[in-house]
Length: 290
Image (tube, rainbow, N blue to C red; front, side):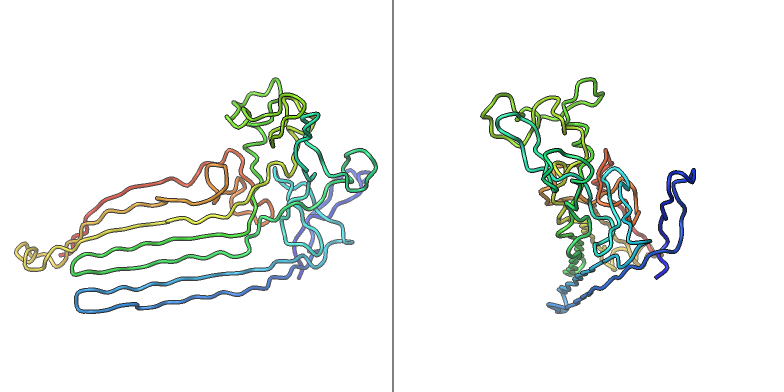
Protein backbone atom coordinates (compact mmCIF):
# COMPACT_ATOMS: atom_id res chain seq x y z
CA UNK A 1 0.00 0.00 0.00
CA UNK A 2 0.93 3.69 -0.28
CA UNK A 3 2.87 3.01 -3.48
CA UNK A 4 4.77 6.15 -4.45
CA UNK A 5 3.78 7.08 -7.97
CA UNK A 6 3.37 10.11 -10.20
CA UNK A 7 -0.02 11.84 -9.88
CA UNK A 8 -0.90 13.67 -13.12
CA UNK A 9 -2.37 17.19 -12.98
CA UNK A 10 -4.38 19.09 -15.60
CA UNK A 11 -2.16 20.99 -18.00
CA UNK A 12 -3.92 24.22 -17.02
CA UNK A 13 -2.25 24.01 -13.60
CA UNK A 14 1.14 24.67 -15.16
CA UNK A 15 2.54 21.42 -13.78
CA UNK A 16 2.56 17.90 -15.14
CA UNK A 17 2.01 16.38 -11.70
CA UNK A 18 3.78 15.34 -8.53
CA UNK A 19 4.74 12.22 -6.60
CA UNK A 20 2.25 10.94 -4.04
CA UNK A 21 1.48 7.72 -2.15
CA UNK A 22 -1.45 6.77 -4.33
CA UNK A 23 -1.09 3.16 -5.37
CA UNK A 24 -1.41 -0.42 -4.24
CA UNK A 25 0.56 -3.35 -5.58
CA UNK A 26 0.51 -7.08 -4.90
CA UNK A 27 3.33 -9.59 -5.19
CA UNK A 28 2.74 -13.30 -4.83
CA UNK A 29 5.24 -15.98 -5.56
CA UNK A 30 7.03 -19.16 -4.72
CA UNK A 31 10.69 -19.92 -4.23
CA UNK A 32 12.23 -23.36 -4.24
CA UNK A 33 15.74 -24.42 -3.32
CA UNK A 34 17.29 -27.87 -3.44
CA UNK A 35 20.72 -28.96 -2.23
CA UNK A 36 21.98 -32.48 -2.74
CA UNK A 37 25.17 -34.39 -2.05
CA UNK A 38 25.03 -36.81 -4.97
CA UNK A 39 28.16 -38.81 -4.32
CA UNK A 40 30.90 -38.92 -1.73
CA UNK A 41 33.98 -41.07 -1.14
CA UNK A 42 37.40 -40.39 0.31
CA UNK A 43 38.67 -39.24 -3.09
CA UNK A 44 35.58 -37.91 -4.85
CA UNK A 45 32.70 -35.63 -3.82
CA UNK A 46 29.88 -34.26 -5.97
CA UNK A 47 27.19 -31.83 -4.81
CA UNK A 48 24.47 -29.93 -6.70
CA UNK A 49 22.25 -27.03 -5.68
CA UNK A 50 19.43 -25.34 -7.54
CA UNK A 51 16.80 -22.66 -7.05
CA UNK A 52 13.63 -21.60 -8.83
CA UNK A 53 11.61 -18.42 -8.22
CA UNK A 54 8.21 -17.41 -9.54
CA UNK A 55 6.72 -13.99 -8.82
CA UNK A 56 3.33 -12.69 -9.94
CA UNK A 57 3.09 -8.93 -9.69
CA UNK A 58 -0.15 -6.95 -10.09
CA UNK A 59 -1.10 -3.29 -9.74
CA UNK A 60 -4.24 -3.14 -7.59
CA UNK A 61 -5.04 0.58 -7.64
CA UNK A 62 -3.81 3.94 -8.95
CA UNK A 63 -5.03 7.51 -8.62
CA UNK A 64 -8.54 7.51 -10.09
CA UNK A 65 -7.56 4.34 -11.94
CA UNK A 66 -5.51 6.49 -14.32
CA UNK A 67 -2.65 4.53 -15.93
CA UNK A 68 0.91 5.82 -16.10
CA UNK A 69 2.30 5.32 -19.60
CA UNK A 70 5.23 6.27 -21.84
CA UNK A 71 7.85 5.42 -19.23
CA UNK A 72 11.27 5.06 -20.80
CA UNK A 73 12.27 4.09 -24.31
CA UNK A 74 10.22 0.90 -24.17
CA UNK A 75 6.98 2.71 -23.27
CA UNK A 76 6.59 0.81 -20.00
CA UNK A 77 3.30 1.37 -18.22
CA UNK A 78 1.62 1.03 -14.84
CA UNK A 79 -1.96 -0.13 -15.35
CA UNK A 80 -4.47 -1.45 -12.84
CA UNK A 81 -4.82 -5.21 -12.99
CA UNK A 82 -1.52 -5.64 -14.85
CA UNK A 83 2.08 -6.42 -13.83
CA UNK A 84 4.28 -3.40 -13.29
CA UNK A 85 6.17 -2.17 -16.34
CA UNK A 86 4.18 -3.86 -19.12
CA UNK A 87 4.91 -2.69 -22.67
CA UNK A 88 2.13 -0.37 -23.91
CA UNK A 89 2.36 0.58 -27.57
CA UNK A 90 1.08 -0.16 -31.08
CA UNK A 91 0.84 -3.86 -31.91
CA UNK A 92 2.50 -4.82 -35.18
CA UNK A 93 0.73 -7.43 -37.32
CA UNK A 94 3.64 -7.82 -39.73
CA UNK A 95 4.62 -6.44 -43.13
CA UNK A 96 1.98 -5.94 -45.81
CA UNK A 97 3.24 -7.84 -48.90
CA UNK A 98 1.54 -5.37 -51.23
CA UNK A 99 2.91 -2.12 -49.75
CA UNK A 100 5.90 -3.07 -47.60
CA UNK A 101 4.48 -1.11 -44.68
CA UNK A 102 4.27 -2.40 -41.12
CA UNK A 103 0.59 -3.04 -40.35
CA UNK A 104 -0.65 -1.94 -36.93
CA UNK A 105 -3.61 -3.37 -35.07
CA UNK A 106 -6.55 -0.95 -35.40
CA UNK A 107 -8.06 -1.66 -31.98
CA UNK A 108 -11.14 0.59 -32.33
CA UNK A 109 -11.63 -0.16 -36.05
CA UNK A 110 -11.89 3.51 -37.00
CA UNK A 111 -9.65 3.13 -40.04
CA UNK A 112 -6.70 5.10 -38.65
CA UNK A 113 -3.88 4.41 -36.22
CA UNK A 114 -3.92 6.83 -33.28
CA UNK A 115 -3.02 6.78 -29.58
CA UNK A 116 -6.35 5.09 -28.96
CA UNK A 117 -4.96 1.97 -30.66
CA UNK A 118 -2.10 1.49 -28.21
CA UNK A 119 -2.39 -1.65 -26.11
CA UNK A 120 -0.46 -4.01 -23.85
CA UNK A 121 1.83 -6.00 -26.13
CA UNK A 122 4.37 -7.57 -23.79
CA UNK A 123 5.62 -8.14 -20.26
CA UNK A 124 9.26 -7.69 -19.16
CA UNK A 125 8.65 -9.71 -15.99
CA UNK A 126 9.81 -13.35 -16.31
CA UNK A 127 7.55 -16.31 -15.60
CA UNK A 128 10.34 -17.77 -13.53
CA UNK A 129 14.06 -17.39 -12.86
CA UNK A 130 16.60 -19.62 -11.26
CA UNK A 131 20.01 -21.16 -11.26
CA UNK A 132 21.93 -24.39 -10.91
CA UNK A 133 25.40 -24.89 -9.47
CA UNK A 134 27.54 -27.97 -9.04
CA UNK A 135 30.78 -28.66 -7.21
CA UNK A 136 33.09 -31.60 -7.85
CA UNK A 137 36.21 -32.53 -5.92
CA UNK A 138 38.61 -35.31 -6.93
CA UNK A 139 41.66 -35.67 -4.75
CA UNK A 140 43.43 -32.30 -5.11
CA UNK A 141 41.29 -31.05 -7.99
CA UNK A 142 38.09 -29.00 -7.63
CA UNK A 143 35.59 -27.85 -10.24
CA UNK A 144 32.74 -25.38 -9.75
CA UNK A 145 30.05 -24.55 -12.34
CA UNK A 146 27.39 -21.87 -11.78
CA UNK A 147 24.55 -21.19 -14.21
CA UNK A 148 21.45 -18.99 -14.25
CA UNK A 149 18.31 -18.76 -16.38
CA UNK A 150 15.27 -16.61 -17.02
CA UNK A 151 12.13 -17.68 -18.86
CA UNK A 152 9.06 -15.87 -20.17
CA UNK A 153 10.28 -12.26 -20.09
CA UNK A 154 10.21 -10.01 -23.13
CA UNK A 155 12.63 -7.30 -24.23
CA UNK A 156 12.04 -4.14 -26.22
CA UNK A 157 15.08 -4.03 -28.50
CA UNK A 158 15.50 -0.27 -28.79
CA UNK A 159 18.81 -0.82 -30.57
CA UNK A 160 16.97 -2.40 -33.50
CA UNK A 161 14.64 0.59 -33.61
CA UNK A 162 17.63 2.69 -34.67
CA UNK A 163 19.72 0.16 -36.60
CA UNK A 164 16.87 -1.17 -38.75
CA UNK A 165 14.55 1.77 -39.32
CA UNK A 166 16.11 2.67 -42.72
CA UNK A 167 15.04 6.28 -42.33
CA UNK A 168 16.97 8.70 -44.52
CA UNK A 169 19.12 11.12 -42.56
CA UNK A 170 19.58 8.77 -39.59
CA UNK A 171 23.12 8.70 -38.18
CA UNK A 172 23.20 5.05 -37.14
CA UNK A 173 24.68 2.25 -39.20
CA UNK A 174 22.13 -0.34 -40.22
CA UNK A 175 22.39 -4.07 -39.53
CA UNK A 176 22.52 -6.77 -42.19
CA UNK A 177 18.95 -7.65 -41.24
CA UNK A 178 17.74 -4.92 -43.63
CA UNK A 179 19.03 -7.01 -46.55
CA UNK A 180 15.79 -8.95 -46.07
CA UNK A 181 13.68 -5.79 -46.43
CA UNK A 182 10.59 -5.53 -48.61
CA UNK A 183 11.50 -4.36 -52.11
CA UNK A 184 8.54 -4.99 -54.40
CA UNK A 185 4.88 -6.05 -54.23
CA UNK A 186 4.55 -9.72 -53.36
CA UNK A 187 7.69 -9.94 -51.19
CA UNK A 188 7.06 -11.97 -48.03
CA UNK A 189 9.31 -10.73 -45.22
CA UNK A 190 9.23 -9.40 -41.66
CA UNK A 191 11.43 -6.39 -42.50
CA UNK A 192 9.52 -3.37 -43.90
CA UNK A 193 10.51 -1.16 -46.81
CA UNK A 194 12.85 1.82 -46.61
CA UNK A 195 11.21 4.87 -45.03
CA UNK A 196 8.09 2.99 -44.00
CA UNK A 197 5.60 4.95 -41.90
CA UNK A 198 6.11 2.97 -38.69
CA UNK A 199 9.79 2.00 -39.11
CA UNK A 200 10.97 4.39 -36.41
CA UNK A 201 7.94 4.14 -34.14
CA UNK A 202 7.88 2.36 -30.78
CA UNK A 203 5.88 -0.72 -31.70
CA UNK A 204 5.80 -4.42 -30.87
CA UNK A 205 7.84 -4.99 -34.06
CA UNK A 206 10.90 -4.55 -31.83
CA UNK A 207 9.78 -6.77 -28.95
CA UNK A 208 11.54 -10.13 -28.60
CA UNK A 209 11.64 -13.12 -26.30
CA UNK A 210 14.27 -12.42 -23.63
CA UNK A 211 14.54 -15.92 -22.16
CA UNK A 212 18.08 -17.18 -21.69
CA UNK A 213 20.38 -19.71 -20.05
CA UNK A 214 23.88 -18.63 -19.07
CA UNK A 215 26.99 -20.29 -17.71
CA UNK A 216 27.82 -17.61 -15.18
CA UNK A 217 31.07 -19.03 -13.84
CA UNK A 218 33.34 -22.05 -14.28
CA UNK A 219 36.36 -22.46 -12.01
CA UNK A 220 38.93 -25.26 -12.02
CA UNK A 221 41.46 -25.45 -9.21
CA UNK A 222 44.28 -27.63 -7.95
CA UNK A 223 45.75 -27.81 -4.44
CA UNK A 224 49.43 -28.64 -4.39
CA UNK A 225 50.31 -31.67 -2.23
CA UNK A 226 50.96 -30.92 1.44
CA UNK A 227 54.23 -32.84 1.52
CA UNK A 228 55.53 -30.59 -1.25
CA UNK A 229 54.54 -27.18 0.12
CA UNK A 230 55.34 -27.99 3.75
CA UNK A 231 59.03 -27.83 2.83
CA UNK A 232 58.51 -24.12 2.27
CA UNK A 233 56.52 -23.70 5.49
CA UNK A 234 53.27 -23.22 3.58
CA UNK A 235 49.90 -24.63 4.68
CA UNK A 236 48.01 -24.37 1.38
CA UNK A 237 48.76 -23.46 -2.23
CA UNK A 238 45.95 -23.49 -4.79
CA UNK A 239 46.23 -22.57 -8.44
CA UNK A 240 43.08 -21.95 -10.44
CA UNK A 241 41.62 -20.79 -13.74
CA UNK A 242 38.19 -19.26 -14.11
CA UNK A 243 35.82 -18.06 -16.81
CA UNK A 244 32.79 -15.81 -16.36
CA UNK A 245 29.85 -15.60 -18.78
CA UNK A 246 31.39 -18.27 -20.98
CA UNK A 247 28.18 -19.29 -22.77
CA UNK A 248 24.71 -17.79 -23.25
CA UNK A 249 21.86 -19.64 -24.97
CA UNK A 250 19.04 -17.37 -26.14
CA UNK A 251 16.90 -16.50 -29.16
CA UNK A 252 17.31 -12.78 -28.42
CA UNK A 253 18.99 -10.98 -31.32
CA UNK A 254 20.67 -8.29 -29.23
CA UNK A 255 24.11 -8.42 -27.65
CA UNK A 256 22.89 -9.58 -24.24
CA UNK A 257 19.43 -10.59 -22.94
CA UNK A 258 20.43 -9.93 -19.32
CA UNK A 259 20.62 -6.14 -19.59
CA UNK A 260 18.45 -3.08 -19.08
CA UNK A 261 19.38 0.42 -20.21
CA UNK A 262 17.73 1.90 -17.10
CA UNK A 263 19.67 -0.18 -14.60
CA UNK A 264 17.69 -1.64 -11.72
CA UNK A 265 14.57 0.50 -12.24
CA UNK A 266 11.43 -1.43 -11.27
CA UNK A 267 9.34 0.44 -13.86
CA UNK A 268 11.62 1.16 -16.84
CA UNK A 269 12.58 -2.43 -17.37
CA UNK A 270 13.17 -4.93 -20.12
CA UNK A 271 14.58 -2.39 -22.58
CA UNK A 272 17.83 -2.68 -24.51
CA UNK A 273 19.19 0.53 -25.99
CA UNK A 274 22.79 0.18 -27.17
CA UNK A 275 23.43 -1.37 -23.76
CA UNK A 276 26.88 -2.81 -23.13
CA UNK A 277 26.72 -6.58 -22.71
CA UNK A 278 28.03 -8.39 -19.66
CA UNK A 279 31.68 -9.12 -20.51
CA UNK A 280 33.20 -12.56 -20.88
CA UNK A 281 36.26 -12.77 -18.68
CA UNK A 282 39.09 -15.26 -18.17
CA UNK A 283 41.20 -15.17 -15.04
CA UNK A 284 43.90 -17.28 -13.43
CA UNK A 285 45.58 -17.04 -10.06
CA UNK A 286 47.25 -18.62 -7.11
CA UNK A 287 46.27 -18.61 -3.44
CA UNK A 288 49.04 -19.08 -0.89
CA UNK A 289 48.45 -19.66 2.82
CA UNK A 290 51.25 -19.56 5.39
